[in-house]
Amino acid sequence: MAANPVTLVVGEEEFLVDRTVRELIAQARQALGETGDEGGDLHDIEASALTHGELMSLTSPSLFGGGAIVVIRAAQNAGKEVAAEITRFAAAPAPDTVIILTHAGGAKGKALVTDLKKAGAQVAERPKLTRAAERADFVKSEFKRAGRQADQGAVQALLDAIGGDLRELASAVDQLASDTDGRINAATVARYYRGRAEATGFSVADHAVEGRLSEALEQLRWALATGTAPVLITSALANGVRLLGRVGAAGNKNSAALAGEVGAPPWKIDQVRRQLRGWNPSGVAWALQAVAEADAQVKGDSVSAAYALERAIRRIVAARSMTR
Image (cartoon, rainbow, N blue to C red; front, side, top):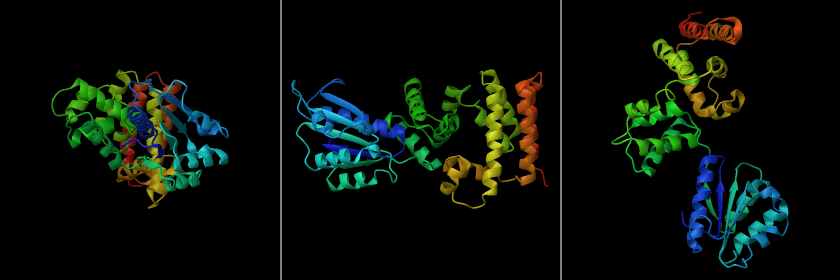
C-alpha cells in the first residue's frame, strides 16, 4: 500500500486494523524521509478526544523540522466540527503531513467515510473474518508472509489448535516459521502445540458433541495433565451442548442473522450445524443434564473431577445416538 496524505482504515478486525496502521506509519516515515521508529512527529489520538481546531495544530510544521503523522482512532466518534475539519484536510492536505484514521464501519459516522472518499482519501477495508474459509485464507497468507510453505492439513490443524483469534494465529505462524524446518504439515503443528493445541476445553467439547469418544477422552486427559481447570472444561461442554440446542431450534435461519441471537460468530454456527447431525432435541436435553451434574460434582460434590468429566463425556456421546 503506497503512502498517501490521508488513509482511512475501515473495519472491525482489530488485529488487521492495527497491523495496517503500523505499516502505514512506517511507509509515511519513509515517504517523509524519516528513519527508525522515532522519526518525525507522531500523534496518536482518539477521535472523541479531538477538539475543534486541534487538528490544525497537530498538522502544523514542527519547529525542529520534519513531517507530522497523525493517527486518529475510532473516527466514527468524531464530533461534527472535527469531522468537517478532517474532510477539509483530506481535500487539501498540508505538505509533509500524513493522517491515518480508523473507523469501525457500520452506520455510525458513515457520512465521514463517504466524505473522505469523495475528498480523495485512500481507503483500506479490513472487515471481520467470520467464515471458516476466510480464516483459513488468513492463515495461508500468514505462512506466505513468513516465507514458508504449509499444506492444507497444517492450516486446519492450526485453526483447531488456536481458534479464531487472528493475533494468536499470526503469532503461532511466526513461531512455527522460526522454530521449524521444511514444509509445515499437520504433524508439525501437532508436535509443536501438543499440550496446548490438542488439549483445550473447547476441543474436548467439540469431540464430545461430534460423538468421537476416544478423541474426547484423550484430549480431556491432556487438558487436565497440562493444567486446564476442570471448571473450564465443564463450561466448554455446557457451551457446546447449549449451542446445539439453540442452533438446532433456529432451523435454516441465516448464520449471520443468527449470530447475534445465540452469541456466536457465523463460522461457529456453521460448525455447530455440522455437529448437529445425529442429534435430536431429547438427546440435547439429556446431554445438558449430564453437564449440569458434572458441573456440580467438579465444584465440590465429587472426590474426582476427572472421573466426573469423563462420565459426562461418555453420557454426551451416548445422548447423541438417542432415538427419542
